[in-house]
Length: 191
Length: 248
Image 1 (cartoon, chains in turn green, orange):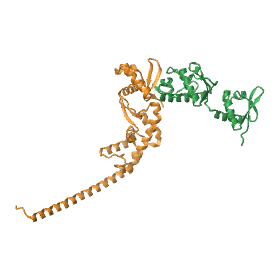
Image 2 (cartoon, one colour; image 1 turned 90 degrees about the vertical axis):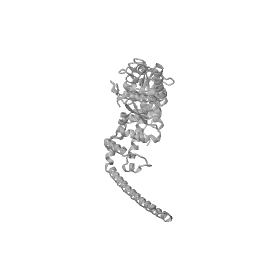
Image 3 (cartoon, one colour; image 1 turned 45 degrees about the vertical axis):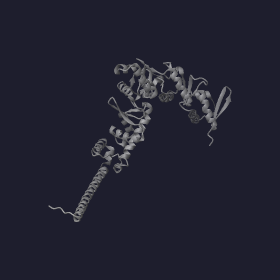
Image 4 (cartoon, chains in turn orange, yellow; image 1 turned 90 degrees about the horizontal axis):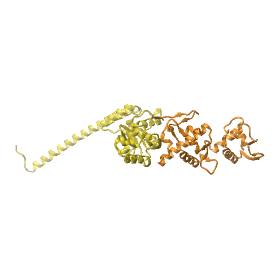
């Protein structure tokens, strides 16, 4: 039996390690386990980017119709990730700042950083400039659900808030209180 | 014939002894000179050979093999260090070539170590080293790898070629594989990497305790295999990455 790469129905290329049965078991040897965890983290981040998924929950390990099923299970070899195993990987991701707990103060659900907040800040700013929305006041909703789909479509508000915060530090964005909640104004780069 | 007695006889004897000694030292001097000139000729011939065939030696694996065979049959080690025959390696630049290959072998062994636990199949190693060298590097053979590993020995890094069930493997961890582990690796190779206790009990006549201890040691102590607790038949299977058929 050769361990091969595989293209999923959603067009994602699974690495060959995904067809290795022991990949779906937590390894008792700590060195081996850290290697496996690193492989899993890489897989989760690339898949999240491919499908534009933001939230990963422990429950995703159990639901066959979960958005993450293509990577969390492998029907071809009849293996699946266990919830406990997934939970440990999620903790490792949060420890490495590749995700944050969302909502905070629990460990069963994370917001996956397939782009770091700093990268999101640049993507956001670029989109604002390109769509000619500098200096206008925008609501969060206008960013997360724009008329024309953008790279920011569906971005979770906590992540958006972080990105705006980063732009704020370089004087490129300003939070503004508006009638029905919060808004933001983007400013031209100062020199 | 009457032999001379008295003092004159001593003189005569001394004299003939001296002239014999002179003659013999002259003879040996000429022999040494002769040898020197022969050696010089040999050197020139070798140097000529080395310079004309340098490129073929570096680039053509079969030529290189023949050349090394020839060298070992006449008792010349082309790779001998500076202490003996260093000029030879110098002429060919083969020493550097071999050390460079050694570095590439170490590179591959170290980068794949986390995947295979420090045990790599020879053919896989040759493939990965060739890939690393790129097209311009010229092809290399198992023979070259074995030689390079020998040059690595003084470093004490523990690189070793081991033969498991007729298959050559290169070990890059300083861990002695005990006999049981060797048997397990052989079983794993037949099964595409998967080993379970029952195989060892049925095929090798081991007791369950022995099988379990050997497998658990490989798993937990040595990190040479991975655990699969979702195995359909026995629930707990061990997988040896170096024996699995990876596509890439």
